[in-house]
Amino acid sequence: MADSVATMPVVVPTDGMTVTESIRLKPGTYVLPHGMTIAADNVTIDGSSATIVGTDRAGTAITVRGRSGVTIRNCRIRDFYHGIAVHGGRDLTITGNCVTGTAEVVTNTVFLNIWEPAENAYGAGILLNRVENADVNDNNLQHQMNGLLTYHCRALRVRQNNACYNSGFGFHLFETCDSIFEENWADYCNRYQPRDENGVRVGAGSYGHMGADATGFLLIHGSCNNVLRRNFARLGGDGFFLAGRRPDGVDVPCNDNLFEENDGSLSPNIAFEATFSSGNIFRNNWADRCNYGFWLGFSSKNILEGNRMLWNRQAGIAVENGADMQVRDNDFQSNGNGILIWTRHSASFLATDNTNSTSRNWTITNNRFLKNGTGIAILANMDHGIRPATELPEDQTESRPRDHVIRDNDIQENRIGVHLCHADRTVIEKNKLAHNVEADLRRDDDHNTKLGPNLGSAGAYL
Image (cartoon, rainbow, N blue to C red; front, side, top):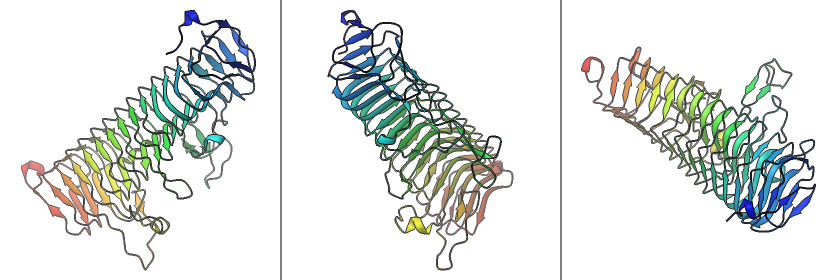
């Protein structure tokens, strides 16, 4: 248990000091370029609103290595590389601190590398590396590059922290598992990478990429079994970004995470991106007014239920070569496509793994599709689901989507209700397919589709 403030000695901090007992800092502003180190177990530092200032955004204000029972609270920290850095240890509490102005890659320049290991970590308000059983609560981590970076951690409880207006990641999980991230804020974690029309970076004012892999919440490299609930990550490069395959092609899936009651709306890119992973559940989230609400390419066995997707430019849900998905009880309104499912042949991908060689075995039930361009599109051999992919080699046959079930959905007032293109063995039954402007059902070279009964316009069955 953390020490009582009344029993702790009041200390004037000195540069490079080592702390071996619980202390309370004397209020004031202190320039400590070498920071301080906690070098004993069961130690509390209470900042009492003292401000610790670094120089040139280098070094660390408070460092902990291999300790247990440490509490850091009520400190104000600015202008270091990392504000608080913990390397190894357990039973940690970091609460009520304000850490801002840490090291930042110059904004509106480079595309970020989300795969940086702990030894090359970007600057951040708080860095946790190989920490188990920790509470990180009520910290202000705004206006810098990254709020909280976690590497190889387990059993974290991260609640009610504010990491808005950062140019990198609000909250970052790298092989961090079995943790809870609840009621945190990471709005407008975004950046811009200028480019010319050929994709080469140039000065401001040219073409470019909004987002550049900045995101409110980043889960990578085997971050599994986490709960992310009631968090805000609006206006980010992405809202929530989960990646399960390294650039060198090695699979490091992020499986079995629960995303519940979060808001990732208003991204120029994607509210929820989760690729090369399985078993993730997305329940009762908001994904409005983005390019895509959900992008779940090459993933499998995901459940999407009770989510809201409004006014997304391309699609509410977009998935390339996804398998064994369940989509139920969601609301899709005024998107380019409600659900956009497609396949794309990739020789390099199939050479190493054919688990997701095509789109297959989806169950789409009890959803509401209103005023979308297309309610549900299941298409073969597409690029991003919106244009034909490169023509297949002569010795390859098209990977056709197969074995999808569309049942008990309300699909009305879209331009096209359901569009099948080169899809095999689709079941379409017990839906209300009515008042769609061009067609309730459009079929282009689909095979063995099972139809009906589906309730059409004026009560007629299709």
